[in-house]
Amino acid sequence: MKTAYKFRLYPNRQQEAQLALTLDTCRHLWNKALADRKNAWEREGITRSYEDQAALLVFEKQSNHNLNAVHSQVEQDVLRRLQKSFDNFFRRVREGARKKGYPRFKSINRYSSVTYPQSGFKLNGSRLILSKISGGIRTFVHRPIVGRIKTCSIKRDKTNAWYVIFTTELENPTKLKPKTTIGVDLGITHAAVTSDGQYFDYPKYQVQAETKNRAANKSLHRKKLGSNNRKKAQTKLARIAKRVTNLREEFLHQVSRKLVNSADSIVFEDLSIQNMLKNHCLAKHIQDVSWGKLIRFTVSKAERAGKTVVLVNPYNTSQRCSACGEIVSKKLKDRVHICSRCGLIICRDLNASMGIRTLGLRGIACGEPTSGFGLCPK
Image (cartoon, helix red, strand yellow):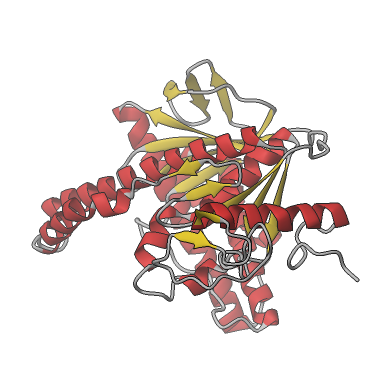
């Protein structure tokens, strides 16, 4: 099982210049390798492979001295990434995808990370030592790293902040036999409601930041193209978006941790979020609360704990009575479930989460935790 650890880097001016040079050199290498593949096919009908370009890299380093300032395995990883991009492109062509996604040339704003796949890096306490980079880079290691480190990636975001991402490998934990199960209903009024009565209200960070975001956008469009003031305005706008993302992810990490700690099996609806985004009245709020990311965070934490996440069909989960199974039609504005058959009066979201839990239990009992409505296959 692989796990990623992301830490903030605080390089000094010399180290930041060297890291920026490494990024720019790798970007130029990508563009040159892509141009070589494109020209070889268009002019000679030859398909370049990773092995071909890795062999040519040796001769390229003799004429381009910037390549000598970058660790050799980092340069090889650039060519592997390009090979992977072409593999994915040809796969989409074979599958008949509408968007084929031919690999693109990278501008300075579209190439933001490099990877040390095996060696050339070492974390010594709070200092990250990288090959071809002078000194140790100050690193904020906010949690211990568990497992054997496999790769090290250096990333620069749009606000010019630097990060290191370690990928580690762990043995798969022993799966626990589920003893407790909770259902989770995802929504907008309440981001998540569990069948045991927990309510998690999302603070709507994107909506809160709309005024600042609008003002920063207006300021950006008043600046002259290519000017330093425009770059400053772009950074200011990116910082607003970054703050919203950080606050949202902190909230989702806290909720997913509480969900995993609450039960051995967590049941979600298998929502078609892309189709739900077609509702223009709700799309902004659905994107802001990020249901898909909450499910991914919960799955990741559950795997490390040996627990299970179950997805069930969402059909009629909001309309069906959790006590008697009667269909009680409700509009989106109706927030209370009132069943005329059994007399159950309960919060609409809590009723849905209890019904989701029931579907999940049926699926687990049948050994088909992700099948249809959670019913036993015939």
